[in-house]
Structures are given as C-alpha cells and as structure tokens.
Amino acid sequence: MSDCVVSSGSRPLVSPAPVRFVHNDRFGAAEAIASDDFDALLRDRPDILASFSENGDLCWTVQTWCRLRDAGFGGIEIATEPAEGRINLAKAKTLTRAGPRLGMFQVSIQADYPRVLWAQFHIQQNADLLCDDSAFQYLWPQAGIIPRDPSRDRVERVAFLGNVSGNLAASADEWTRLFAKRGLEFVARDPDRWHDFSDIDIAIGIRSFGHARQSRKPANKMINAWIGRVPFIGGSDSAFAQAGTAGIDHLLATTRDEVLAQVDRLANESDLYSSIVEAGSQKALEFTPERLVEQWTALLEGPVAARYRQWAAHPVRENNRLRALGVAQSGVELAKSVGRKVLRRGYEA
Image 1 (tube, rainbow, N blue to C red):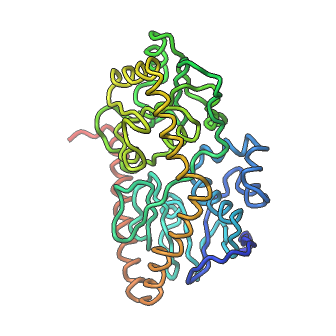
Image 2: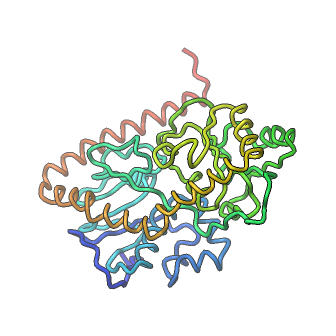
Image 3: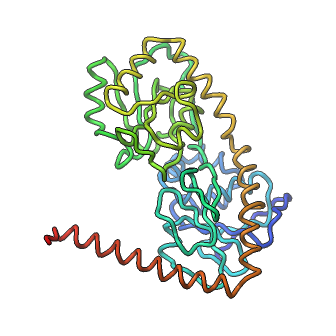
C-alpha cells in the first residue's frame, strides 16, 4: 500500500514475515509516524498527547510502532490496510469492521472489545481472557506522566483520570458531594490532563461497586498512579490483582463507604500513604517503555511468530477455518444487531 511506512532502525526483529501494524489514521497518527522521537512529540504537542490518551487504536498500534522504532527496530511496517505476506496487527474493532480476508494473517488486539472469532491470534490486556491462541500484553501507560509535586504534604484532592462514561461507579457530581463532606475536592479531568498527577493526592479507579472482575479491562489507571507517585484506590478489577497486591501497592474498595474509609486512612496515616506510594513506585519500574518494548519483542518473536508459521504451513485448513468462523462471527453480529433493534423498540412478548 502507498501509505505504508517502514521503520529504519538497525535492530532486526526475528520474524517469519514482516510485521505490520494497521491503524485507523486518527488525529496525531501521521505526526507520530513522521516524528523522530515519540516522547518529544507528545511533550511538544498537548493536542496530540490528548488524542493518544483518548484513542485506544493510537495507543495499541501507532504508539507500539513508534516505541519499537525509537528502540532501534527496523523493518516494521505501519499502514491503514493489512497486506498479504505480513503479520498484520490491528485493534479488534478495526478487524470486525473490515471482516475476514482469505490469505491474510491477522492478529486481533482485543483490548476491551468482543473477541474476533476468525482472527488467527489474539493479544489480551487482561489475563482472564487468555486461551490457546492468545498471549498477554500490557497496554502502554499514559505518556508524559507528571508526578505529584513532592512539596504537597496533605490530602486535599482526589481524582479520576480517565473517561468517566462507563468507567466510574456513581457520577462525578456524587463523588464531589461525598468528598466535599470531608473537606476534599474531587476532580475528573479532561483527556489533555490525564497525565498530570502534580496536584493530585489520591487517584481512584472504581468502575463498579461489588465484585465484578471487569475481565476486559487493563490495569492502567493503577499503573499510571504508580508512575505519578500517587496512592491508588481501585475496585475489584482482576487486572489490578494481576499487576499489583491490594494493601501493599494499592488499596481495594468495593462500596462507596469503603472508598471513603480508604481515603480517610490515607489522609490520616502518613506511614500508610508513604508505603503505598513507595511500593507503587517500585512496581512502576516494570512498566517503563524499555520494559514494555522487551515484552512486545518477546511476544512478536515468540507466540505470534509461532502461530504464523503454523498458519503458513496449513493454508487449506486455515482458509476453511477462516470461512467457518467468519460465518459464525456474522451470525453473532446479526444477533447483536437484532437484539439492539428489539430493545430500542421496547419489544413486548
């Protein structure tokens, strides 16, 4: 394809076919691909930083290509369309829209979307979803994180840094009222400040009350707080338990009252506050760009490459598989579409 760009680094990626990241050309993609230094671009362009904060396609495809390029890897492609003879990686939503293609090897980066049945391999951000044809990979932390100002010496502001819709139990207004009763400010920031922990004292990440595992979700809100040197109070998300240890590097809460109680503990117990921050800072060392580049390299050279070799060795079987699962996927999508129409119509039996 004419839009294909190939990284020119000197480090080879050991792979049976060229690796191609397929993206949706959202705002900031072209600038990131053309940049010489991804981190420098985000520092200089707050508008592009906000775009990468909001858009999962940019984070998973364009950012990964840029990070591998900046680490010196050459020969890795990025384009808006997949190609034959390549290991194509794209977000699950992108693959679903395009549909299955005979003769193409496609890896689904599932993120928090439903499984693409016909994809040849799946990358999961939550270990709950692992199966034989998948592998786990951490999502990149928020880029450009500004840590908490070390001169802050008391708890005054609690924050949620992320998309409130569907990701925050109760409303921002309710949290504002609850914390105001304790003399604390609650903020839910816009995407252009999701990276800024400088004036935050506690971060929360409660998607729902109760014990739902949230098995499609990543641990990033906690990881970002670790990097930002701010204690994190999270819900029952399995990803938090996979990456951290409640009571050591973060605190757990499953109800409104438990959230408030944990905030009170952090406000009143300086030793607890410091220990949570320090433990989180140590865990954050596992999520530097350098460490995640190593993970991506092992993923691409290991299970993804192995699955490609298997796929290439059995073209007839694999094409039959693709056709069958493509039909099954179409049935699933049709059922979802009918269900949505019925619900909108207020169907009565």
